[in-house]
Image 1: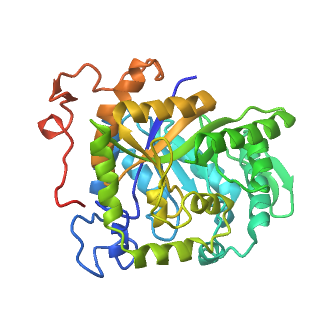
Image 2 (image 1 turned 45 degrees about the horizontal axis):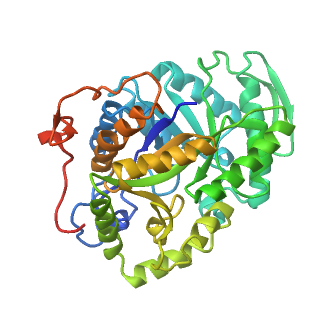
Length: 401
């Protein structure tokens, strides 16, 4: 089982701190700022294209694009980026409660033809009622998962190439059909830590995706989902969503993590924790429990840092350390059964280079990557790094941001 490496597209804005996107009145969609913050980057298609091209050059297989109020639409943004990339796949996040499953199946089929087979689907059921209501969805937590179950059954049914009927609580479909089914069928990624989520994963998904908890907790999740899938006569693969801060030395990596922490004042952390604490998502509550809102003891497991989760919802942990140490942790998760690793960093362009030039060669040397080489493999190094970025090294910014 090889390791599959993926990166992240910050369609809500990017920057050199953990809270830069909040310097925008609308989460980063426009250029209007509340206060001037150095280094904030709006999610212009030109900047996102830089990240996508870098990810492709550095050997990442796909990029995850988020969904939500403060993000650009994932379908439209990524299909545009297929036109400026060649091999890179796009893990498109979307909410099943706000779109017809038959239409979603048709969109996926069209996407596969436009992109020549580069679509992956990330189904986001939603754990925040306030956010769901913005999109007109008023179901409670468990009913949202029940609807997702039906949604995925319909999607797979209409991909069969012949009329499909379905009668459920949430969907009634008569003769649903995707006239030209997608080829290949896009793998379905899905996450959820609640009792309501497990059976949905077991019955429907290809890859169960968890946020970056300590290895022993991840193992418990894998065992849980694997057991449920076996009862359904299915096999589910596993993935993990993490940030990363990888440097030539452990000291440099932790210094970068500490600089990110220094940018967070107590009021910002308190406000973020209060807002995140209202989430109905069990996964989000598990993320919050890793640090309890405190800056003390944020290294919750070797090289696993919970500082990101002080202000960021969703994925709240990062692998921090030297390239070899980060590779060690990836190897540890891989030994548990994790196959897909979805990474990100601040800023996403520079951190992609740090990881791609530093950690990826470590993983390749350990035989954890498939035979397909990165375009950078074998490129002469400058100062110990492949000459893929100007000057043979990532573009870094001073000022402690």
